[in-house]
Image 1 (cartoon, rainbow, N blue to C red):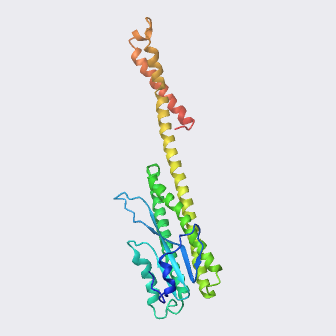
Image 2: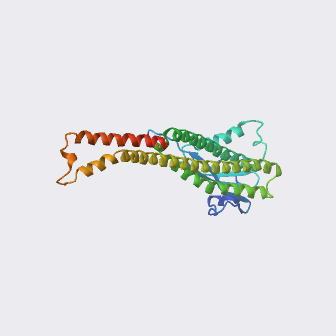
Length: 288
């Protein structure tokens, strides 16, 4: 729970039973309380190639209760890095000249949302760095690149807009609300712009994953075509040998070349001549 600027009154005891979360990012108002259900923060799980851990983004939902102008309550599931988000808020409260200390709960609401969005921005920066690393691997390994890693990133990024857009909708509702002062709305507008930037960044990273997937498929197709090309050349080179072997392997009673003392030498002479001629013909056509 975020440190409150004031203690809730007895009339606010029903906060222990919040309404069910709405399907969209809308403000829920009851009595003097405002419920923000869709504020979301994302964390990138630590990646380790030694343990073969797949890429994953952990999404945590934060419910925020704004009670009047003097009380702010936040509820979120506990996690390993719970202290990180609250430490950032505490640092803002610790300064004697902090704006958070000299404003009401509405400004504290902005501070909490700002910290959440800042953490999401850091996660997006980490994902961008990770994608750059995968791009370098793809340029080096080409068709030997582990495409499953890229698919994990693509899958996780595809889920983020679904959980971030409700938060943006909540901010839109706050900016349209008449209950907040214009000074606080100016700061919330900045948070709203940061969320739009995050969504644009997610779209860019999503397109980057698609581009890398296409590049991998091109590399795989090129490698397959090269293998087929080599096998075709080998098959074509040995085609005269297969033809001559088939001809002189027939069981006819009279084949003069079989009884000639120079038949074996003639066979290899014709075979080598055909092979060398085919080689120069392919070079002339620039097929090899």
